[in-house]
Structures are given as structure tokens and as C-alpha cells.
Image (cartoon, rainbow, N blue to C red; front, side, top):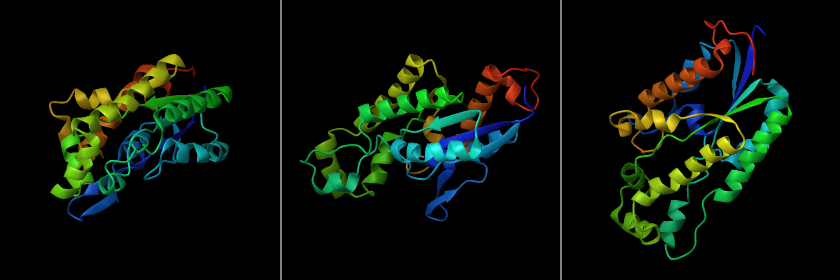
Length: 243
């Protein structure tokens, strides 16, 4: 048993703590994001390597350097939200063309699997996080910039606004399937959101970034997961082994 453990967070703007500040009309960092809320109860250091706009490819390219620098015991992995996204303005300008997501579905799965295997081979515990659900209607308004003309153009290619939710759900399902196939622990953030009376109230105006209340829900879920599976990592724990 060690007195302190090292945690590395890799992911995108959600783990970075980015929210949309309506008063300022721009994205900003939330001081009380889920990482900052959780780290106060952990034994040891937390290194947050998450970046705004990160796809799994961008994040994994830095992972070896981050691991060498921090020597983590546990790596919390949060990717998928940007990977499943598209260049919506490009779609709006040419809706009859073929368009690909930022990360191909199968490529996303392979990179996530390879990352898990690599971490385990180095005696590092990977923990996956599922994606918070998005509000398809609000997100559609956001990507179409509240423009009827842009929205109509996007719909020519998209077909239905609900397809946005379905498409993100595919990537989320991939995360869960890979966790089960590789026997990797995962934190059901999506389930925590969907258990609330109205998960859309946990999202910013863009329909995709968790707001302050959303970050509280994530923090509660992460802490609950740690208490159930790695209780000794918490300052008030009595467990004594890392497994």
C-alpha cells in the first residue's frame, strides 16, 4: 500500500472543464469542474492532460509523453465526443457529398483498444468513461448557428436531427463494448445523466458540454465508482491493496 497515488486524466474539453458561459458569450474554464471536485478527496496527485478539441488520435499522440512524465497508477480515459463529430459547415456547404467524422468509428475502437492494452502492459490501470448524452435539438441549433438556411442544408445530408443522438450513441456503445471485451473498468457517466429527471438541464446552451450541475453529476459518479472499486484511493478509505 502506498500513501499516495498518481492519476492521469486524458480526454477532451469535458475533462478540461470547458463550459459555455452565456453571460460572456464564449467558452471558458469552470473552476469547479469534475476533476477539481474529485481530486480533493483523492490520495495523491492528479494530472489533467485533457485538451479542448481533443480527438483520441490527438490525445494518444501525447499519452506516452504524459505517462513518462507523471508515472501514473491510474489513467482515466474520456474520448469520443469530438471523434464522432463532423465538420458541419463543410456539410452545409456541400450536403450532397460524402462526409466523414473526425475519427472513423472502427479507427476509434482500435485506438482505444490499443491504448488499453499498452497501459495494462505497463502495469497502469486504465479506466474508461462513457459520454454524457447530448441534446440533439439544442446541438443542431448550435451547429447550424440558429440559421434556417444552414439548418436546411445540413438536414439534406443528415436526414433527421435525432440521428445526431444516435450517432453519438454508437461511439458510446463502442466504449462500453471495448471495456467489456478487454475487461476494463468503466464509469457510466451517461447512465448517471439519463437517471436525472431531465438530463438536458445538465448541459450548456450548445447541447453537448456539461454545465456546472453536469460536472457535479460526473464528480459524484466518479467518486461513487472509486468508493465501490478502489476505496483505498480515497482519503477516508480503509482498504489497503491496488488490484
